[in-house]
Image 1 (cartoon, helix red, strand yellow):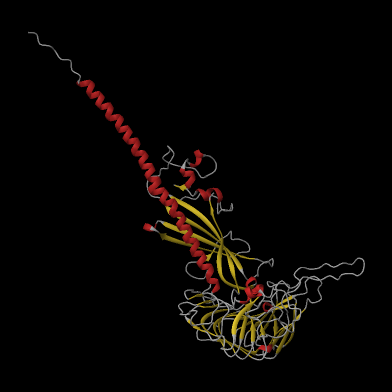
Image 2 (image 1 turned 90 degrees about the vertical axis):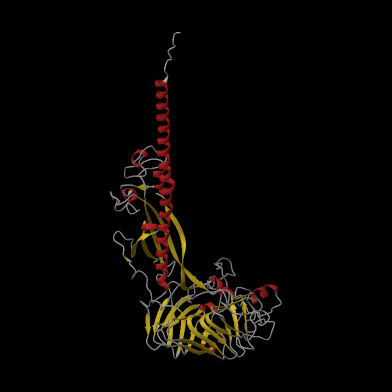
Length: 556
């Protein structure tokens, strides 16, 4: 029997297996490369992209916190904690400061550089002493992993520019996230962002940077309520009360006899006060906004309060008090100390007595005076009274001492009186001769056929009589120093008081048309307090904080 010879297929099988292994290996290698690239994107590059913004915003927060120190005279900004004067080119007129914060985040891989530019408006739109700030922050995140990018077959990205073409900068997400493997491409293209200092700038490690810009503007205080007290409130007296009115309401045709519902006649020349419970529904809506705010739990009430009451930790309820509005015992707040204004260029009044003339044409450009105290009688006259277009004037008096004499503010004058010492006067010593409300739109008149109509200028932009006489208690700088404001009868008061470090006391049967910010408040007897709601729309020129008005990211 003949044996059949078997043909072997071992070689073909081996070749097929080898080809299969090669193909699978190529597929696996390609998958591995793609996975590595996408791992770089998701776990490394995307993380660094987000963290660079975190670092930039951390720098912006640090800069904004430094700007807010300007409100505290005992802790001036840009003087410590690593802040230095920014190098050229600094903005004109400047000045500018800079600071670098390094070793932030996980493993200290983040850093930020902050530059703050100070802008003072000399056009008169805002007070020349009130600066705005531009805060520019660059956040940098160190990039770990292989120098590869997504959506691209190129392992290495080169070139200086973002904008020339994809070949010179890399493609795909390199362009989107602006990764700097070897050079800072932003500086190579835009320099400092304004075309200055353009040049090749190598980087120590691969990095991602993001840039933001904030604009911080001052936040001015307005009297949004009757009384705002930092420490303790005790008032009004048992026969007194707190209420409100609006000086923009139609004036009383008989100013010497104000229309009121009750017997609480406030006095002459009060044209728009109608009492706590007027029958007119419009006036009634304006009568119950005599709000009282206390930053602590220390609240004692004698007479009724026609308005809302807030405390911080108090135990005020409707059942135990005479309060018409809402009560909230969980409202904390702070009021920064009031620093002395700049008196450069002010006229010195050695005795603090006599007559001075105001010719300033706005709150931001008042006529300035400075004296060592007011113990006699000071009259502030209107130097613009003869003007046919704007017969009103503004004055700013800085008293480096006590106020114990009489102050008369003539009609058409808005006067600010700043003082460092104490104030002890009677109501009649604060003689505000302005009136509420007036012609808000000028009448150009008619010079044609008789009878001719004379031109009538627009009234003062501030409709409130109270708002024409403003007192500011400058906070004492000595730790143990105190400040007091004592106002006794007789005479009614038409003035505001902003004195966050002062203890204010009202006594007697004085009617006080006002708004007060103080450390503490005490009112006894039948002292009545009336808040003019029109003050809520008038800034008093005191900056209580800064706020961010603009936030942008430089996406170039």
